[in-house]
Length: 144
Image: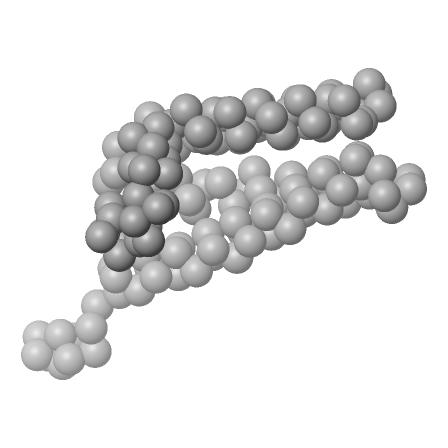
């Protein structure tokens, strides 16, 4: 299945393409990623390519950090990363000086946006987690 669809739902002319995509999903994702890196490396000045590298390294670091934590600890991990995301928001805002169409400002805007989403999501998850540990009002009345 590709995106929850059966192969029979596709036009018969496209079935080999769908089967190839399904069988080689990882290789295609790697090729797309390396292609994007190559295009960015050819189009950006060398002084700004380093920002793409920092961004890629931060994505890898975050992926390996979250993947190495047991599922039972994901909710507390999200709560702790609010502080880190807050620091990233401040750092991204400090990097927003310069020409608006530069890679530095674009990556800073992306980091501020995604870190802000992470902060808001972290607070929502933390609030939900705290609500789970509050006693229910009817439970308090039954013990009185």
